Length: 328
Image 1 (tube, one colour):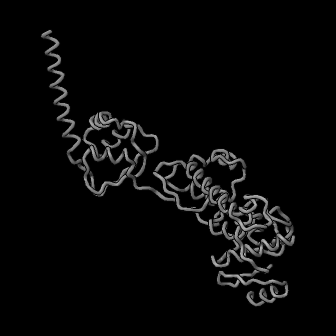
Image 2: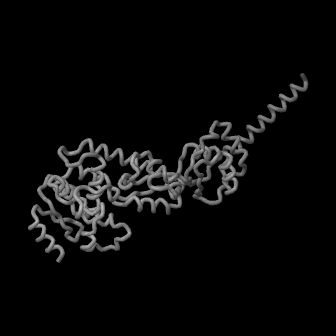
Image 3: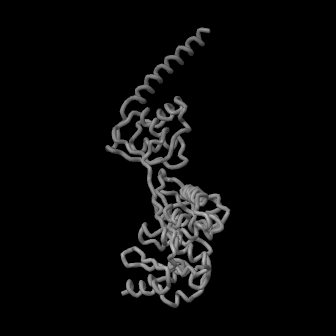
């Protein structure tokens, strides 16, 4: 009995000492190498690896004490990845709270209206803050991963600014952009102007991508959409240069020749009627809305004025005069 009492006493003394040491460790401001101080926690890092990392870079004086503190507070599995910035020296308790609440400096990636899917992949593959899980994947594999039913990726990722923590997978970013495009496309489709010669949201996406590439100024989008809608209604060829250029791929050298307009490809809207097989770019929300709410116009033609805007005509005669004028 005397032995048990002695052991219990020693245990309580040890626990009290540990509590004092833990309290001192938890509430004493840490010594940082510099202020402000930035560090990153990679995706999937364990508490043990994070504590070791913090000790090695000079933030924590003792990694074991930090692990014990986190476990005592029930936060051992709540560490969140990301970029962190310390403007003042925190206590270990404040640092743990910051890490478990995910108060991170987020990175951002802007997907630009009118980019092609290949341009998007190139930007993702060269971004040093993203984990490049898609780099060796085929287009079909990427589309399967994001939950698409179609293997064709062009046009299906919504242009926007996306925020993420360092080490986030590019596949997660692509999935978010894909889901965002589905949401905006379906919402725009449900409120579309009645009587459009478009049979599905995907056809709307195709035409929106053409409108996106043809629009030099925002104010012309709905008129450009109106021209293409009118031409589809009448069974006229769309005759849009950006589609021809897209179909040429790497053969395009920056200048479009007459022979290019005569060379038949699935994307040559001078030789083939109707819409292209897929979108030719990533259309933004403004292009989607303009396509599904086009201007009410009798225009069938337009030509670039040279300042980014377009001149619209209702007859071929008017259009030819406009072409002669603005080409000069």
